[in-house]
Image 1 (spheres, rainbow, N blue to C red):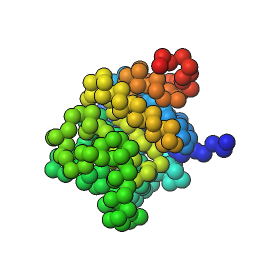
Image 2: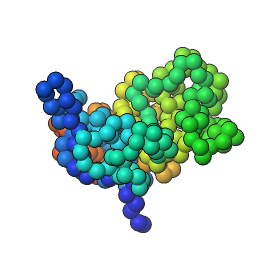
Image 3: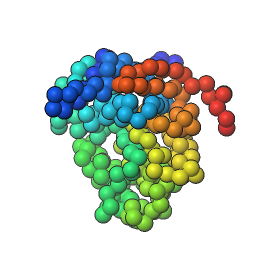
Image 4: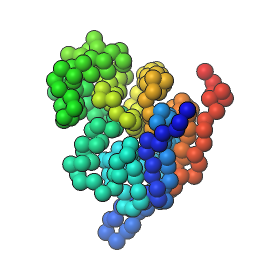
Length: 237
């Protein structure tokens, strides 16, 4: 089977400037993620893993280096181009769910699709229905986020991430605000999406969540210190 590179980072640097202090959040990052992979990025707080995810998702621009996302040279894009490519190519799952409180579940999932010129109203409705069915939340389509549990809100956030069939799903501590039962349910959902062909890159500090991935990239002080295939046979069921 031919391996298809989905994203590639070459010598990525990210420096934050405050007063006269330079903080090197990312240094010389080399990373390739292939289509269909499930990658976990792990490391201690403040090591640069969330900054890396922001660069991958075009939420932030690197200070130096090259980034290619699904054929798009991502470094020199205009703000509008970045937004357009981000909306089409990337599905985000955040720790804090980031649902809009005065929109229903259905409206929250539909919102990113309304900014895309390749979806009409009928296609949006179909995509939203399909995504909610995948996460078993179709029965809550007309509810508001405040009427849902944390686990249900994260399921809606997953539906929003997958509705537009993005090239990659980026998950930033997706179980961080959940109890162990709901965390396990969300991780099982990501497993299902991966089995169905989704490419997933997840930031986590939880070793049990990281072990769900195929590959573990470890970050320390803004540098990749390890990049290993996870031996799933050694992980307890």
